[in-house]
Amino acid sequence: MYTLNEIFFGGLAMLVGGIFWRARHLRKCKYFTSIIGQVIDQQRLNGGKDSDSFREVITYYVDDFRYVYISQSSSYWPREVGTRVELLYNPENPQEAILPKPNAGLLFIVLGFFLTIFGGILWFLSK
Image (cartoon, rainbow, N blue to C red; front, side, top):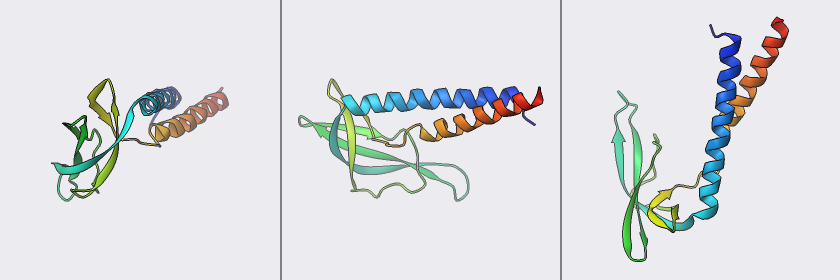
C-alpha cells in the first residue's frame, strides 16, 4: 500500500518531470529544422515471448552528408522500411535529431496532476 506522501510526492515528481520534458521537446521543435528522412531498418529489442519491440533506424541528408538517426523510443508497430518520416535536426549540429512528438510529456503531466491532487485531498481528509 502506498502512503499519502508517496502518492503526493510521486505525483508532484511526475508533474514537474513532464513539464520539463515537454518544455525541452518544444524548445527543440522551435529551433530545429524540419527534414524528411527514410526508415532504413528496424532494430529488434527482445522483450520476451511474442513481445518484441522495435527501434526505427532513419537516414536523412543535410548538405549532401548522410546521417543516421536511431529512435530513442521503441514501438511494437514500427513504420515499414522505406517509409518517409519527418525529423527535426539541429542546424548547428546536424547529427542531433529528434522525431517531433506533439504529445511529449503530456501523459506524465496529466497523471502527475491527478496524483498530486488526489494525494493532497487524501492528506487533507486524514487530518
